[in-house]
Amino acid sequence: MNLGIDIDNTITNTKETIYRYAQRFADRNGYSLNPDINEYRLEQSFGWDTELTRRFLKENLVDIYINVSPKPYAIETINRLYEKHRIVLITSRNERKAEIKNATLYWLKKHGLRYHKLIMNRTDNMFHFSKLTACLENKIDLMIEDHHDLCLEISHHIPVLMFDTPYNAHVKADNIIRVSSWLQVEELIQQFEHSTIHDDV
Ligand SMILES: [Mg+2]
Image (cartoon, rainbow, N blue to C red; front, top):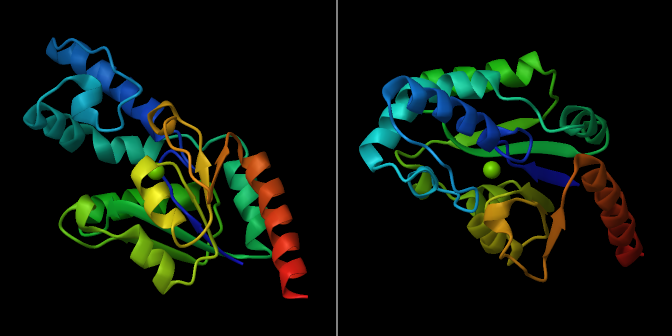
């Protein structure tokens, strides 16, 4: 199968790392911070304006991407899946910023993650990048993702395994299976594979 896999909050603990860096940034600069974990977008989650949020990301995002930890069993599981499936990493991280691309490649190498293809956002804005188009162009059979709207959009075309988070708790759809661990992902992919083979017979 062709497996599409998101990076942030799917392979990595990005939100938790952002909160940690944001707390340090707030303490250093005298801002208050009490993140709302039910909000995906940082401005809403932090209650900061766009300019302050931008400044925080400008100063910290590359370090966050370099230092973020993988979710439990993410690396081992994907490396096992790599033996049998085509692994396509699909991320909204912007490759037009060299330091973002380099940090991403550095992290993937440092953690020994095996993959066949990495697709990054090439547009000038993360909201102009279509993961659905990337999925369709690469004939993805199953997408693994955490973002509520992307999961919904993609699920109209292909099945989605959605990593459980507070900000996607409201999402419920036929073609979306909520997952909480990479070991569960591996089990479901095996089941999915068997049912697909069965359908073909
Ligand atoms: Mg994500």
